[in-house]
Length: 312
Image 1 (cartoon, rainbow, N blue to C red):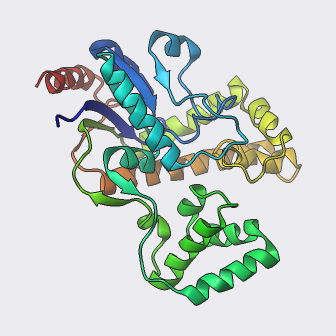
Image 2 (tube, helix red, strand yellow; image 1 turned 180 degrees about the horizontal axis):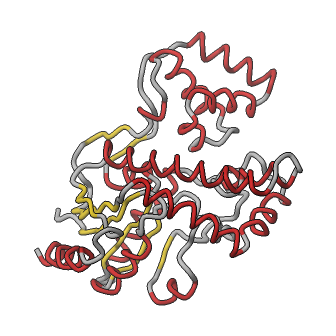
């Protein structure tokens, strides 16, 4: 069966993915699916750098503002919804354009991926962790996972005890983080005919852009948005653990200054950008990389390449 053609734009935060996606969507009659794990939440707009309402009205966007902040949204939820949207958009003669910085989301879409983990089993270890969870609670166990595999913890709700224990077990037995096994491809073949565009730039340039973006978020009202989330008293919710929100908690609790909170957001954003780029370069195949910040004229080349890809 002929595979659906899709466009994917990946890259780290603040590298220009949104701008390119809007330009491409206009050029090829496209509709945009967000592949970002935080933009799915309603009312979290500034800290997640969502595309503006005006731009959303011009180009249809999906998987933005879909769930409440109390809700846990897993990779498997994205996988199911995004695949449905690709079918729907394609059936209307439009081009699905997936834009995102959440690597597991993109991989789960492209390949036949399960989220079970691998490695040897240790039933005695599992039983011991079950006992600890009963005695000290699920959240305590989840905090142990953060210490050894923060990436896995970000994608597992603390009340999903079985999953948390499985992640700890894999690390205990293999010495490798569960997140390195977490997205196991059953087949290496792509499920879609995908044109994957990667955006990157000089690291110092990117870090300056990230710092500036955080400054602009504060000017737009990030403190008020983060305070709204803080007042809802959801410290363990997935939404509350997002960069730009968790760093302001010490400020609200008078344990840090505003400047310290801002610097923490900038630092964590820079670290996240580095992890994103490493992930995409190590895990995704057939990505064509561009530096549009240094060479903006390359955008026209990308448009031509995408149009040629869609015609072939």
